[in-house]
Image 1 (cartoon, rainbow, N blue to C red):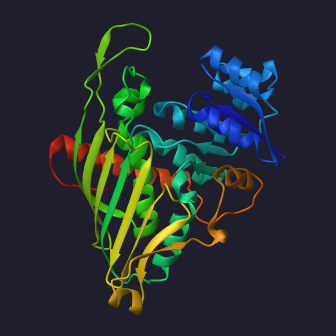
Image 2 (image 1 turned 90 degrees about the vertical axis):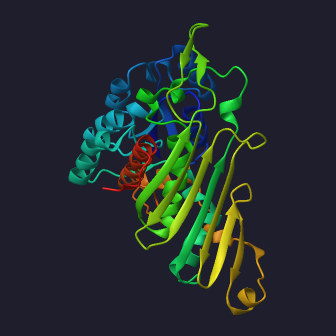
Image 3 (image 1 turned 30 degrees about the vertical axis):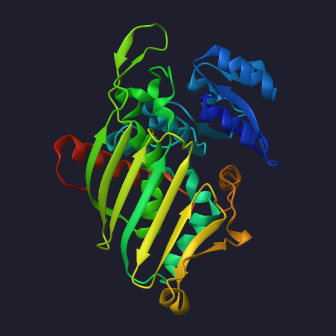
Length: 348
């Protein structure tokens, strides 16, 4: 049994508590949040002892009953909390993106390299069966040389009427807007499937330029992106077009991914996570026969179970680590710089 403490129980954090509590060899024994109302509501719902409900993350990490820590706070707190947990010798599961810029990730990465503490980052779509099957198809070379990749993530959350200036709309807390929140997933998937990204050229924009503050009727400027489009070049020479938006009316959470190679194509829409569209092999290619296949059941993996298994020393292929989070953060930083300077930016 792995005894888990969760830092941040609003939004994604409540999901971490719920999903971890549902795993037979895990128990959420402590929670932390700066909002006492959220702390009480989640604590009461999941029967967490009142003396294990903390307002300060340092108290949760110091709690002897906590063996592993999940972190679901605003982005600018991720590495600070993760570093404290690692120094306490406790495995971590950190929400994405890893922080607000790559500079803030360095101390955590160095500490993990020194200590070897088990760690994971919540690049959730690595765990979708279509993505994992696509990875095997690409690794076997069935598509030949990869030429182009089209990737899109579409939501409509920026256009919710009356949505206020929560932390996701503040650059000093989030680092970026839609790019970091949604685009980090796409970047991780793209590099998992097609290799490291070499350079980017980007444009970003904000649709709703001011919002009311959380605690008043005063309006304040939004200083992050609601949508972002960028072209990336992989180290292999392949090119990708990324489209990331929270201005897509009619889409609650749509992810589309297409990979075109010299011998075929694969594509998927993660609203249907157990299917792939493929045109691979002589007969398919000669007939232009793009068709839908079912992903074998062996590719189905649960994200939270993977974290708990990691804590117990059980390895799961393709588990995303802090090292992967740092790689994604470098690309995020480059995309922001490219959009600001209107030029191609090389990674590193």
